[in-house]
Amino acid sequence: MKIAIVHDWLTGMRGGERVLEAICERFPAAEIFTLVHVPGSVSPAIERLPIHTSFVQHLPFVRRHYRLYLPVFPRAIEQFRFDGFDFVLSVSHCCAKSVIHPAGVPHVCYCLTPMRYAWDQFDAYFGPERIGAVGSAVMRPVMARMAAWDKETSGRADRYVAISHYVAGRIGRYYNREAAVVYPPVDTAFFTPGSTAPERFALVVSALVPYKRIELAMDACAEARVPLKIVGNGPERAALERRAAGDVEFLGRLPDEDVRVLYQRAGVVLLPGEEDFGIVPVEAQACGRPVVALGRGGAAETVVDGQTGALVSEPSAAAFAHAIDDVLNRRFDSSAIRRHAETFGRDRFVREIEAIVAQDGRA
Image 1 (cartoon, rainbow, N blue to C red):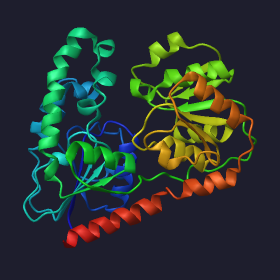
Image 2 (spheres, helix red, strand yellow; image 1 turned 120 degrees about the vertical axis):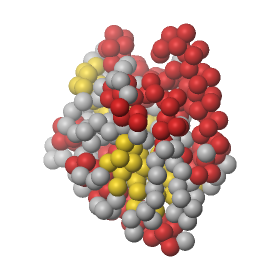
Image 3 (cartoon, rainbow, N blue to C red; image 1 turned 30 degrees about the horizontal axis):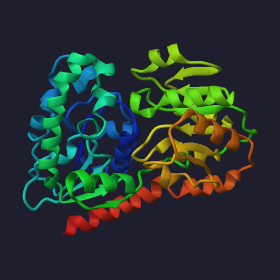
């Protein structure tokens, strides 16, 4: 079976690219179609496959500012052709699910989320405080058109598979489509418990963007008087550094090996934002460490309240501070936390995706 894999863009190794990596390892003869590819930005397992890009690849400054070209993404994604392929598998959080595929060629969309900035997170990406009042006013009708196009083209996928029940609900709400659920892969063979006792500090591993709510973690740790280490970079870093109070350390982007050590050392790992799935809490639990997370979105499906950490009912510094203090002063069974994380491993993901491709490929 000749498989085409469609991904929105390839500019770094984030959660969606980890999913793509596992798929590429399972289907090494597949070919990739993507709007933009920055060579060397993704893993060798992805880079070694044939990668086809759109005309967006050749626009000015696209490698760093590809999101500025959002208005032309619909036209670009629709120009890919899949003649000669037997199966199309899109991994989509923007527009990959809207490819036009030949009649008789099945298209399954593994949906990371419906387009956040076009639907319910416009302000987090394009609000006045992010790009100014004029820029926000210009982007609002643009994103409204994107949302309309996103809904109009939702029927192009023959089947949707969501990364969580939370995302399946969003697919139902915005696309009026049902979706099966296959949790994304977490490398539980790499993220493992350490040999030393945990230390009394909290850890955040995250892109520094508004919807991640890093400021909430900072305020909560200041209130709980717990040191906080933050791994990751992003456009909000300078603003977060200016408002930091208490013992906060910004470590920037780190190699996976260093992140693993920090997971192993941390007394608690924090997830203050509402995530579609949230790989970080599972990686932390694979290292045997408890998690304090907002009890909404994907974290409600990956963190067992009272057993592998704590789910916080409201996004306030006081509520998070109370949960952090409670977790740090309780004794958790790290082996039980680890066993829970193993249910989200890569082998399980590959088996379930393989079964879907085999089933729909015969349909």
